[in-house]
Image (cartoon, rainbow, N blue to C red; front, side, top):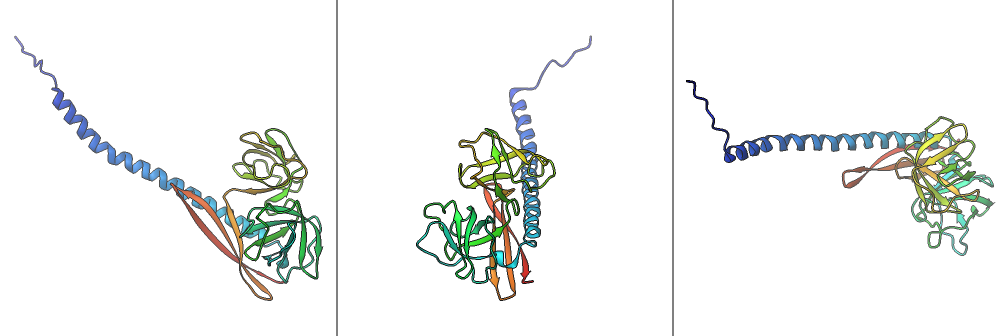
Amino acid sequence: MVWKNREGMSLIEVIVATLLLAIAIIPLLQFFITGSTLTATARHEVTALNFAQELIEELKSVNYNQIGVAREFTGASNKIRLASDAGNIGINQLITITAGKGEGQVRKITGYDADAQVATVDPAWDTGKAPDATSHYLVCENGSILTGTVQSSTASTVTLAGNENSRDDFFKDYHIMIAGGKGAGQVQKIKAFNGTTKIATIESGWHTKPDATSLYRLYRYEYKIEVTTATENLKTIRVTTFYPSGDLLKELSLTTEKHRR
């Protein structure tokens, strides 16, 4: 007769085995979680670096006199006094406040006093956010340097300026902010872009649909453009992008020099 061992594992043995297994697995799980976090941070950092470099390349096409630091100006909610070296600023060009007071606003230039370097804009600056001597600005053509005038919109789309990038999905995963005019203050994420029609499809619907009075700003990550030093013939420009790292927001900066030509 063959006797079989009918004894199984006791409850205590099961608990001990489970604890030992947990002790072995938890560090591995922590390793994978940490690795995923570091990978995500590195991906954001590389993308933010590429975005900053794209901005640097765009700025190389801007005239020396179209970027600078504003001067104090009081008494009008629709004007800005540009730097003393501001050149021939064109009517219907766009001006973006890229850092300092009023940051993020985009306006259309409707008048310019070349002697006083004072530009009139439309619409007026947001209440309490008119530029002052802390404000950095960039003047550019409609549809360049990630700013432009809306052509039209539907509940879930917006048609960008006609001279925006013509590559399909170029602006996919970018954010679009209505930075002036009807619907100002809204921010949406772009999930698709038709380079031929310039129609960007957004992830969720507009609360207030933008129209032809609306001005937009595009960005992959939030950014600042600052003129850190300026001489008669040379400006040093710093581009800073901000990207997420866990619960923190990190920044990355690149600099370039712009010569008067």
